[in-house]
Amino acid sequence: MNTEFSSTDMGNIRIANEVIEIIAGLAATEVVGVAGMSGGVAGGIAELLGRKNLSKGVKVEVGQKQCAVDVSIVADYGVRIPEVAGEIQDNVKRAIESMTGLEVIEVNVHVLGVTFNKPVVEEVIKDEELQQPPNHRVL
Image (cartoon, rainbow, N blue to C red; front, side, top):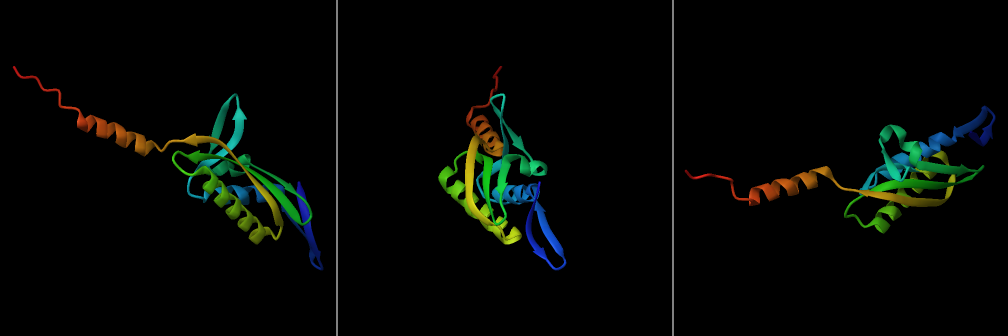
């Protein structure tokens, strides 16, 4: 669905809702502490989506001059989720308003999961292996 934002002597300016969703998704993933976007809960498991599907974790309601955004994310383990969510709200609002001229009246952040960094887990395993004595036999 396209929303008509303005008419000029040259014609109409229309921006598709999907464009606004992609802007919001990109702005959300720029925030440190966001592991990725989440497409929702299907079968009890949140699907972690890559950059190709940024609009899947975003819903927008667009009017003539205003919009509301819902962003679903997966957070990195160990981050302060309220702070990350606040940064997402600020970044999404700033990006949409500067790129489209729409007033963003609300940005709702839904944290649907937490993920662990793989390298940290691998480092812990390596550290445990180093602490164990070698398995030598004396004959």
